[in-house]
Length: 182
Image (cartoon, rainbow, N blue to C red):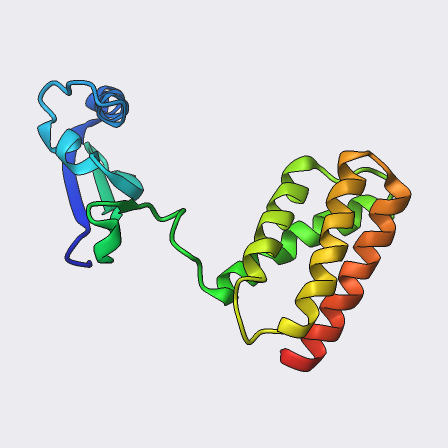
C-alpha cells in the first residue's frame, strides 16, 4: 500500500451490509454518516477507490481501498488538485485503450452500421491525447490529425461513406506508423 492510500476494513453481520453501503453513498455525497465516521474521512477527496466484499459463514468482511486526489507540486498551481483523470496516462496505457474503441468502430462500419457514439468519442479523445506524446511517430501526426478531423466531421454528419474513407485512412496511417515505431 502506498503511503497516501487509505485502507478501511470492517467486519459486519450480513444484515448490516446494506446499511453500510447506504452510509458509504451518503459519505460520497458529503452527507453525515451515522456511526461510520471512517467513511466520510476516508472517501473525502478520492481519485479512485476499490471496494471488496467477502462473505464468510457468519460475517461479511468489507475492504475499502482509497486513493486520494493528487496535489500538484508545481509552484504556479499552488493548492491545485489534479484528479486521476486529469493526470496524463502513460503512452502504452493510452494505446491499449484506443485499440478496442477502434476495433468496435471498424466492426460497425464493416457491417454498414454507424459506430456507437461512445466508441467514437473515446477514440477521438484518446487519439488527440496520443498526438501530445513526442517521439512516437511525430511525422505521422499531421496526416493523422487531418484524417481524425475528417472522421469526426463524417460522424457528426452521419455520412457512412466518409466515415469508411476516413477510418481507412486512419488505419493505413496507424499501420505505417506501427511498422516503423512498434
